[in-house]
Each structure stands twice: as C-alpha cells, then as structure tokens.
Length: 281
Image (cartoon, rainbow, N blue to C red; front, side, top):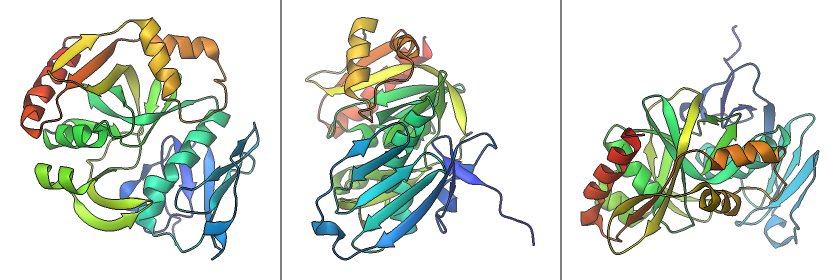
C-alpha cells in the first residue's frame, strides 16, 4: 500500500485532517509539519482561557468556546472543543489561527486578509472585519482571477503561501453573487462555501490592496509610511516581527487603497478599476 502524498496549506504540511484533502494542496517537503488533534470536552465552552504565545508554545482562545494548544517542536495543534469539529470547519476557519502562530515561529509573517494572483504574482488584500473582503475575492474568482487565500495571508521572504481552496460568504453575498453552497454553521456563523481553483503552493508577492468603504469608487496609490501602519494593524499575531528589516521591505512594495461604495451594482466597475490598476504595475 502506498502512503498518501502530503498535503497542506499556508506553507504548512498538515496531518490529522481526514476529509479535508479537497481543500488542501500538495505540500512541499521543506514546509513545517503540524499534526492536528481534536479533544472533545463538554466543559470547554465554559472554561476560562487566556491567550498566550512565546517562541515555543502558544494557547489561543476560540470564539466558539474552547482553545488551541500549539507546540513548535514537535509541530502540533491540539483543539479542545465542546463538540466535534467537521473537516469543513477545521480547514476553514479553525486552521487560520494555527497557520498564523506557526508561521511566526518559522520566521514568516501572517496577516488578517486574503489575496489574489495576477500573472503568477500575488497581491495581498487586507481589510478590517466587515469590509467585504471575501465577497470582493469571490467576485474576482467569478472572473477567473486566482484567489490566493481568504482568511489569513502568510508571507515568507516575499513569497505568499496559498491558503485552503475555499472562500466562505455570508448569505446576502452568496445570493447576490450566485455562488457558494450552504454548509450551515462553521465557526461562529453560517457560511456559504465557494470552492476555489487549484493554485501553486507559493507565489511571489507583488504588493498590497487595502479595501475601504467610500461614496465613490477609486483606486489610489498610497505611500510606504501609510502602508506600514496598515500592515502592522492587520498582523495576525501579537508576537513581534522576527525580522523588522524584512517587514519594512514589505511596506515598500506597491500599495493601493481601494475605495468602493456599499452597492452591489457598483461591484463590476470596482473590479474593472482594480484590475486595471494592478495590471499597470
């Protein structure tokens, strides 16, 4: 019997995720390995948990109750939860905090956000919660633009590691875009899941897009001094950057503020403006 080829996401080799393989990708041999384990404890939802992280161990509180305990060596992530987690839940959204913390341990940067790919290079898309990031990426996917990730963006040495091959939408966005399958409650909310096309495990980083709500559509170039503030605000862990100089280099890449109205009718024009700006770099 042949052993199963290793799979992963976010630049990690993952085990312990049976049933989630369709949302993962072939893992490279040099990627850090993380074994995922599940412990069910009915009292987990009421147990007081304090977030903690150093260079070898971490504990993260889950919004749905319970916690994740992580060890750098051996790579391990133990979920203690009040009820079992499905493969769909594990791969997204529960894998995101694991990816962020483990990536930091291995000298990478992780941001709250997603990304798109044009001509083999990735653009990070970072935004505050409720800024419509996932619906923006799903609309781009409908135009056959490759989406790199939806929830966490992991970067190492100016390379972006692709996330799980899914985007999760809210009900209104799924209905408006005509995309996504109702998977019920995963994490803290109902989700409509849109599968993404396969993508190579890593891409070069071209720059940044920061979506914000505005009255009119505009795509405006921003300076490195503003970009670094936005990057710091959107970091996915509280651990300090392992390499401050490398972090500064990230802020020096081309960066755009994408202003757009809260209007579904304006979305096609917004996509046109964005793709035009990025294609001209």
